[in-house]
Length: 157
Image (tube, rainbow, N blue to C red; front, side, top):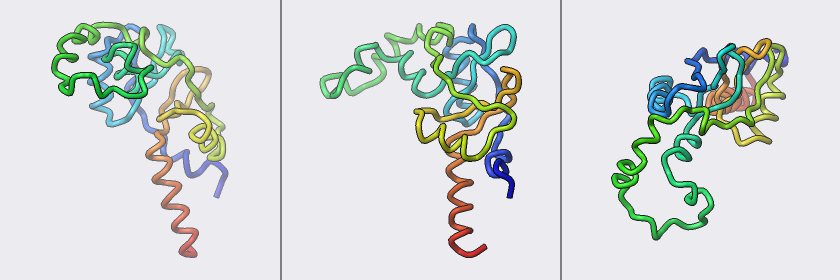
C-alpha cells in the first residue's frame, strides 16, 4: 500500500467559492455539497481561504458571542437574531473567510493529512496544484477511511 493510497481516494471535487460570493450563496453551496467547508479562491483561481460552518456562525452572530464562555442570558429563540442579522447574507465571504488555511500539494501523504487534522482546527484540507484547488479531503471522510482500515488490520485482513 503506497503512503498516500488511503487519502488519495478521498478527494472530493467541490464547488469553489469566490471572494465576492455572498454568505447566503456560500451557505447554500455548503448545504448542497454536503461538506463542512469550501475553499475560497481569488480572481486567478488561487486558494485564499476557507468558508465553512464556523465562518457562517461568525457572520451570523454578533462578535461578542465568540468571546463568551456562557451565553445563557442570550434569548433562546434564533428567529430575532436571524431577522436582525439577515443582511449578513449579502456580505461577501471574503469578509468572514478563514485566511489561515492549510492545504496539501499533489504529492501529499496520508501522514501529512493526519498531521494537519491533528494539529489544526480544520474540517477540510484542500488539495492544490500550483495554488489551484483540485478538490478537498474532509476530516469526516478521512476518519471513516482510517477507522475502516484500522478495524480491518485488527481483524487480520
